[in-house]
Image (tube, rainbow, N blue to C red; front, side, top):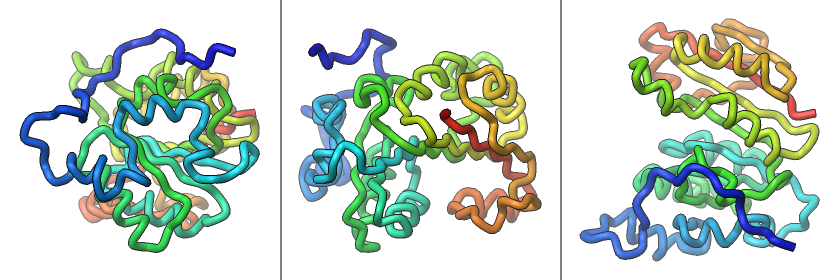
Length: 234
């Protein structure tokens, strides 16, 4: 059986191996945290085999956070749900190491993280490999000429749907009203079912279950509303 990932756009990243003048975070990726963190080369080798990295069966639930940032949600989610595995994806070295470090300091044994471009998920994940997916406060690329760089696109949602298992959900949050305007029709036209949608998460019935991220708290202090949607993969 051919397990090679399909041909697609090339990831927007520079290889970790051989980087000149590596920072402490670059060195930590394949050094101190090598058991829990994967550079882009090792991440591709794990495609279809991530549960082996956790030492669990193929039926075990494994969730994915795309863009872990400084890792507060990543650490919270992994520690609050030890019965599920959590795989993180982050392209920047410092937040990647911060994320896995926070999770491990909180005692999590169910957390792993990789460095990769989120637009090229099929390179590192096989169809039906993940359960729930979390995308919180992705770069909104506010200028019109840059909208092509936004993560949420028709094609991306179609490909993500294929990577998720039936019954799982996609959890999305953004502080950008413009980005949410962009996402709403894409969500409606996607293969997902919209389970919930609100333009003011913290004034909604879903506020109590929401974990407030570091950046989210800063936005709230500025009076910025948080937009949220949950999409179900049937």
